[in-house]
Amino acid sequence: MEKIINEEVQGTTLTLSKNEKSTRKLYIESYGCQMNFSDSEIVASILAKEGFNTTQELAEADLVLVNTCSIREKAELTVRKRLEKFNAVKKINPKMKVGVLGCMAERLKDKFLDEEKIVDMVVGPDAYKDLPNLIQEIDEGRNAVNVILSKDETYGDIAPVRLNTNGVTAFVSITRGCDNMCTFCVVPFTRGRERSRNPVSIIEEVNELWGKGFKEITLLGQNVDSYLWYGGGLKKDFEKASEIQKATSVNFAKLLELCALAQPKMRVRFSTSNPQDMTLDVIETMSKFENICNYIHLPVQSGSNRILKAMNRLHTREQYFELIDNIRQLIPDCAISQDMISGFPTETEEDHKDTLSLMEYVKYDYGFMFAYSERPGTLAARKLADDVPENTKKRRLAEVIALQRKHGLFRTQQHVGKTQEILIEGTSKKSDSHWMGRNSQNTVAVFPKEHYKIGDFVMVKINDCTSATLIGEGVDYSKNN
Image (cartoon, rainbow, N blue to C red; front, side):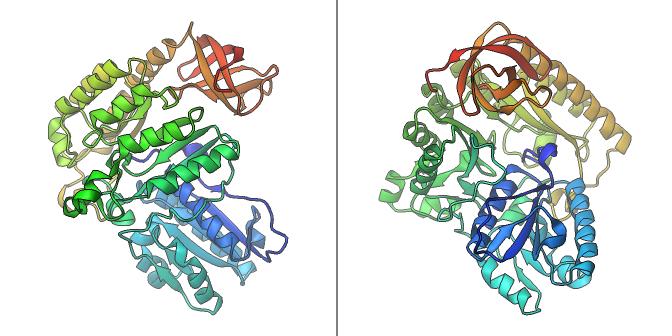
């Protein structure tokens, strides 16, 4: 539930430039969080070397892959409907092979292959390097499966093919897996133990992206604040590391600094943070570097200590407030966003009111809010009855959303009258004569195109706003241009 799921990009088909020597066609769709879309770029890079060109025409594909998400029931239902569609096309094109990647692959491997017989190949999120072998298996008429979760795979040695990119912003994966056993979440079971990527390979990727014209990166992980590199190995084994490994280790605050220094004119963002793991040195590092954006996605899930304990969130309401206070003190104009679950098992009206009062204290800029959805295999599904009535969940969620809209407008209005740096990402959805970009706080801004172009850093005077969008006019290029 902590992963941000952008509904606008669900099911996006990936395409990259054609290699005339390649003879086979790959159709790949992605669902779920940013991590899945980043993984699809890794898969495309691996398969490009195996002679596959991507296509957006399902009917002509030799291999159809769907990169899946298990975080909410809706995501799984959507993927199942797509698999039905793929199999209907397969009857017309018998040579087509269908594979499931990602989190659903790990969780439902037996159903897909043996019980329902709806796919040829099942590949978990740590097994993408095995794709050439698995494809050979299905080419020879056998089903293929690899859902083994790794303790060390980070794909740090694979340069992702940037797919469907605006050429301006890019994701850089820094960790994989998660050790936080939140009772509502399937991620530890589908993506395995937490491990960090070598910082040298991360900085190399950042420098390569700058060389290709990218102006902003987002450091990506299930829990970026847990990043810890000491030469390889799981975070939980750090206490067994040698003294020299500990002395030369790189934590998330240090990695942020390395990225900021590597390309001083490149914006740096990160997602997702976890309140229990975000330390003061991360906030201090953000405050020191202008190119680290003033925006933190800080999921809280509930404002009730009792519910937080039931969720196995290892922070309290009071600790969360302390973290918010530290952020406000060191970075006064920092935007903060949340994830919130309404109707978690045993949630009472008092618990719900605690959530609303926490929101009043923080006044988040944005929010990602959901009614509780029981996920098979999680501790909550095994131990806690889903006992909050559906209509109560929906009513509480509606109240949370209404309050977030009020706070969102309040935060957006605070930008009006200021002149802010906006990085142009593309044309506005509502007007071909306007550019769309974002400020440091991740708020969308639109302004007349004039002589500016995509990828420019422009100082924009903010004259007006809606609840989610800033409206302004370009003043001049920024010093980072």
